[in-house]
Image (tube, rainbow, N blue to C red; front, side, top):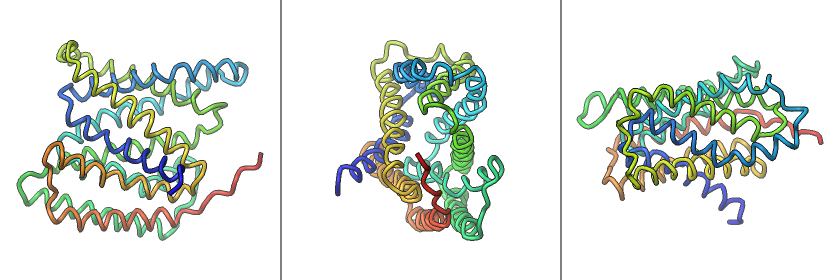
Length: 292
């Protein structure tokens, strides 16, 4: 294993910690989402200003205007994710929210006109069958939450939409001129939505501040940055499929920290989900390399 494989593995592990820190925090989900995004935007702001000075004439108010819809979608994703992750097991929440590869072809078809092939559709059906098994088990057994599954699934759809919007907005002069304003705008929208619950935040709690800083730094900045870096060295399909492995790390941490133990049904369902995602991912054609 070379350093690139290690960086990919570290990025997957960093992203998997999100569900754990969300479950460990006692802050209201909307307040938590606002603080996570605003802290991430503040920490990344130096990169924004460096790129802003480098691309002064290329970055316009139109770019900022186009950042609003992705920011709104990202804000809704973070709020729903923080809500849903607390309602079900960390492994299950992480598995559902990483169904993005089966939803992405449909969003890209709608937004940028990319074609959907039959294997992507079959892979989606298989993965959804796995989700159906999980939901049926939660409906019939104690300790499950159909609502939690539904919220995490909705959060996944929002994240897939956000990523598809990023694909459509790839003409921005720099990644940081797109990501940082989106984080800041999304954080501001979450803060507005959080006004009824801001007073519940334990301002003097070092533990809550540490968890929010951890959410901003580990999964949001470190995890996403390492995955973006991996996309430059590995095939996109490989990174997408490897990223689904977040649920394994989340499950291990959930067992050690919260003594969460998934039912036997979960392992069969996760096999269906991963198989469906793998089929959909490898059915997606690799885009030709860009000419420089």
